[in-house]
Length: 322
Image (cartoon, rainbow, N blue to C red; front, side, top):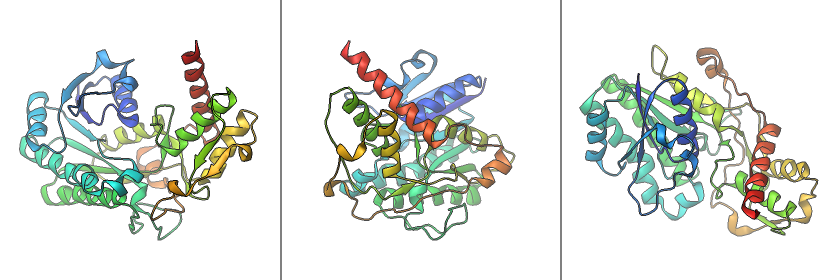
């Protein structure tokens, strides 16, 4: 039975990845930070099947201890300060977790067992002010937020350790991926939750920022499969994981509200406080390399994704009312 360590296991991606790895016959070690309140909501259906350990990307020795105790063959580094607006208000903390945290984990691997295969969660936010459309593995990086800058560091330090120490390190440049497990602070879940609340008479308006921003949105459950496939290859490499389609925030709103027979224009209010200091206007990925080398392709399209999230929010709200 292979063993995998997943940092950020309580997050959206961590929960889907842990679920997937269990299906593949792995022993899953999930790393969580010690806080007064740890939210296991996304893991409650599999929590008894995985081993939760305490560790912190800010604490080098905790990472070394976990690797020595559990001897994983694979490490998936999904932990980060991953909310872009927060990175503007907490840029130093974002850098500590999202940038230097990657180095601490790579150093721990180099010290304990250089044969460990390492996955780094890179991000389409690294492309920022895009230099070409669509964006691929060779597209120059131009991040537009402290989060994007930190992810660029994590991406390049992984490449550096791969080339300097011959570690099996891969970066998955994942474009936006959503699901019913997405945090409510993210715009997609904010939209589907509000649409469901308005439909049920629990809310009357939705405040949003830039409706023209365009993203390449896929389903998180599809994307964790690509993470695993990267670590099963003969040689480490970096891959863009995306749908190849781009949609605006307004299109996401329209799809969610029209699915519930609502006119979004009656409820959506554009609010300047939700605008970013520096916006990323257009993201759309080219997943050709992932398709050719990994045999990966998405199974859930844009409309299905939006409706999946709306249905889940409706169900949750209706259950809460009972």
